[in-house]
Length: 263
Ligand SMILES: Nc1ncnc2c1ncn2[C@@H]1O[C@H](COP(=O)(O)OP(=O)(O)OP(=O)(O)O)[C@@H](O)[C@H]1O
Ligand SMILES: C[C@H](N)[C@H](N)CCCCCC(=O)O
Ligand SMILES: [Mg+2]
Image (cartoon, rainbow, N blue to C red; front, side, top):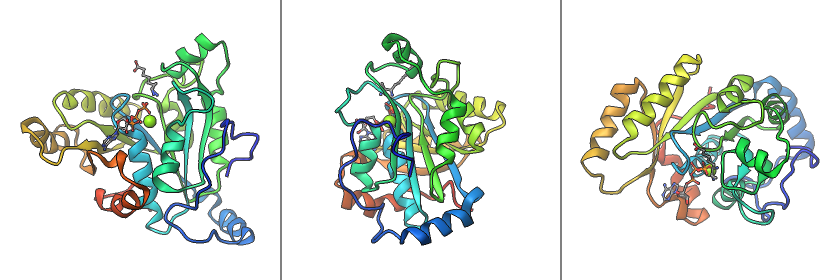
């Protein structure tokens, strides 16, 4: 858990239990486990080909699927934009879907814009990517999921830092959430190519898959792996974001054929 002073969310998540887990291990056992895993913590950055592609829902689904493997999972939204002080943001959505209390939002800005733009308009600073990475490294978990804002090149600080810089600072795996419909071949291709040129090898997940896919959706499921060189590791069914927690936690592990953050 982040020390309270670092967890700048204005309101605590609803009273919740761990992701799909029963009682938390006693504090001494958790400290011993954390000391043991120390550098063993693995980081997964969840980015997307765009805003609104399903990064938050995928973050929640990954948290459930990893916890189902017996892993302690934490989730972080470094910068939330477009919500007021007492409105639910992405971190709250992850809490609602998973029941986890290990979910953190580090900064919140009023305008529904890119974090850099929203911060400039609000006249407030943003922590630099290096500072964000340091805070995230302080988390006590086997796997830490980090959701970006918008797509890959959206600036998360006032120094030009993006989720690419954060992934590099955390030596993180990168999950790219893509749409399944027409247009995704270009968006996913651009995103994957840019990550490759940065020396990062992403995984692909489709954020919202129709129960009855049309011509483009069907062909994209084979064209995306063929053109990006990446398998599709997860298909999140359309409507997943509207499921009740019990259904979401029961179904989420089945949506993935491979998981990041697992050695
Ligand atoms: N599988 C899904 N089925 C139905 N609705 C979904 C699904 N995934 C996402 N949505 C809905 O689409 C909207 C955008 O999804 P989400 O918030 O996950 O996108 P995002 O990529 O996280 O956006 P942002 O860049 O703002 O963080 C939300 O209202 C969410 O509930
Ligand atoms: C406000 C919304 N919820 C997103 N988190 C912010 C998306 C910024 C997208 C910027 C852009 O690509 O033009
Ligand atoms: Mg989101």
